[in-house]
Amino acid sequence: MKGAPRSRPTIGTILVAGAAFALTPNSVSLSQTSSSQDSLLATIQTIVVAPVATTGNLNVSGGSAANLETALEEQLDEAGFTVVPAFEFIGVWQHIADEVGGFFDEFTGERNDELFEVAVARLRRELRHRFDADAILHPELSEAIVPFVDGVARWDNRLEEVFGADGLNGEVRALSLEIFVEDTAGTELIANRTGIATMEAWHNDAWLPLHLEGVLSASRLVAEAVSSVLTPIVESKPSDSDRGR
Image: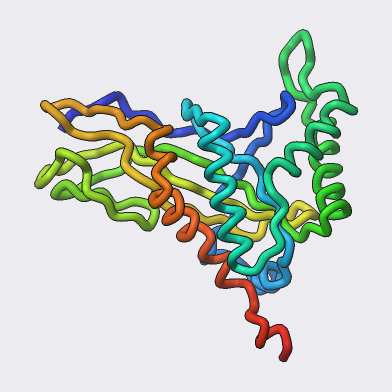
């Protein structure tokens, strides 16, 4: 099957107050966590949810990003964590960025990495001191080209029928949610990702793109993806009986 031109997504960033946060998902996967990282995960009680980042050419409206952030916050709260919402993260970072006056050279447009790293370290400290935060959860949306066989796509722990492609084999664009969690000292603890939905339908021998905002407005899809991607964090939380031992 032939479809739209294919390209791989790039490393994601989130723009907050004119500064780009470079995310490094998958630097620590669930299977790669050490015993010390497992121990750190088990001590997390208060989690800050950072704003949603995107990769490549994905453009997500503020409303859709907020809905996804809220879903993460609500499920973490239901799991027994104390949750600091994304707007608090943004407020602290905005204050720091305003004080610094910007991270980019007005002539070259290049970022002052040293100044930026100092500001990020300050952000972590302030989140820890202001909210007694143990960890920061960074969510990211990404697209990839994934294979499907007999009309069924399998990627990032998700299985889905590709609309209009019954019995066919090929490739389709698909959306995933990825998180990575770091403690407030900047130690990366864990990364995880899960598929959300395919982003194209096969119709009249051509791919029809599905609207990103429409996919993200489907509460069931978002809730399923959030539940899946948070599984290693939720499962790492000791029960009340375990804490009492």
